[in-house]
Length: 339
Image 1: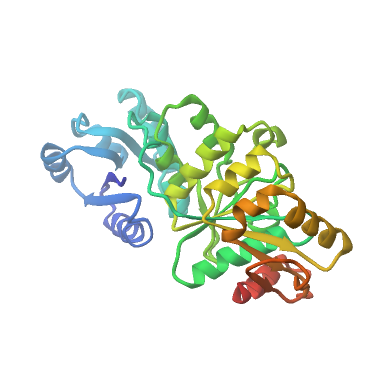
Image 2 (image 1 turned 180 degrees about the horizontal axis):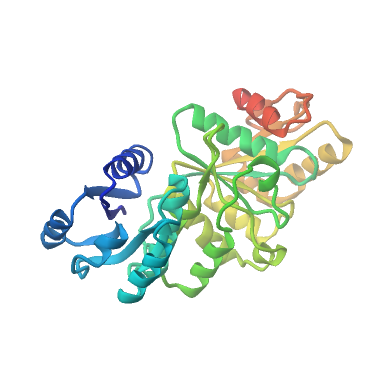
């Protein structure tokens, strides 16, 4: 689903820049129209309805906005006092700062629209390819492998989004841009109201250097910890609707929630290294756990840090080298070529 977005401002340089950027980078989320006079605005609104309209303060009171589901005032420091007065005249109008990073502006708009939209897009999702990354042992570089795989998919021209389901998130260690917490998705899924797909499009962040999309970490530990198997299933199904490839970084337990993720996944990267603990736990999982027999057809053993898995009865395996660097971003980007 794309929202019909109207940009109505006298500032033609701003509207052209905004329209070009949105059409180029966010065409999957918005269909943009632009007008620069009050007269044209009236004609636009007479001709069709719009989901969202971004309006200069004076334009916001110049026309009948009944054709706009969610009008939004473009606000600047210079017209703060005037803007407050105009907002008071138009009941329910939202405000958004005009001059800011376009990705942040769009995120604010999509999040606001998702909250008030009467359409719940939680049905009939387009499903991305889902890759689950898991290990029975800690410290083997599971998150590094997950991000390396996402980076590899980006290099192949795919949109890839990283979803961290560990209770203590690794996201802040790899990505610097903050945004709305993934906890907002949990809240909307629980309430069953709003447009979940639009919310996801709004809150997913994009790392400009690696090209990987990601969701910011939960507000607190329990937000992940209390999710049921059905919650997890709904979350992953929803997240897979906004990308080509969803890479899910799992916690270490092999519980009902993990098994549900294994069922949903199109492929599973099972990570190990050369440590005794990792070898022992991988051997136990492969030989003693009936889950492995159910998923082995779509599982790839990833031997990280220069390890090998020749002693394990696996159908598919890859070995990744040990990368000596304190920069975690260098490590996963270097490993991407081997996946």
